Picture 1 (spheres, rainbow, N blue to C red):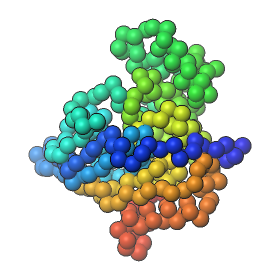
Picture 2 (picture 1 turned 90 degrees about the vertical axis):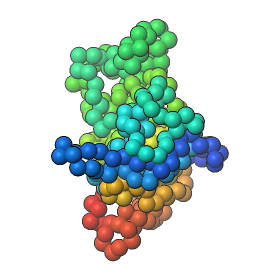
Picture 3 (picture 1 turned 135 degrees about the vertical axis):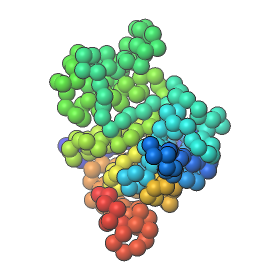
Picture 4 (picture 1 turned 60 degrees about the horizontal axis):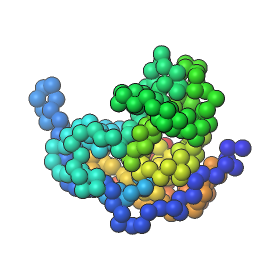
Length: 280
């Protein structure tokens, strides 16, 4: 049964201080069509360790996706610095991959061809890269579907293909922007377990954006809470829940208390405020 299948143990973390990503004084401002300034992010500071699984929660419009796009090199910051191994992020990099909420698979490509797309764009058609693509499909249990087309897959299976595609170039960092938000509850739970297993085997640094507090607590080693716009970090909660984690973990008192603590940070400590943020 799904709930009896343990996720990867979270005890295999890298030593404290092994920082990979450093975000200091990050600001992002936009101009509207009416030439009015909008502050999306202000004073964001965060260190992310190599191999760490970080989850970010916050209300809609707080700048979570903007932060991710800056980390991916798709947006430039207005002020502050963002570095990987002390090197500024100024453009997309081969060692950073992104998984979006929608799988965005090409409908005229098979599953295998969709996974191979990053290599195809680089002109890499070697047997080695095809072998890696097949290894990744095997990793997520889709080895028998490599010749199927996206319309023949469920939503959860399509997202597994998207994750394989992101991992093809063996990135150091995996950025995930609400990748399971559009899935039904059972598919979401299954992919949460799958993602923890992949993380345990691949040891990537993962930054995972979600609107779900339980999902963040289940997946993350730390949960970062962001305020309404202009987005800033209002709290960072270490997740000290025993591993390996299973679906039963969500029914434990520790899990519930951790979720409540994060809701309190989201609500600023005011009675009822966390509920008004409307994060489940």
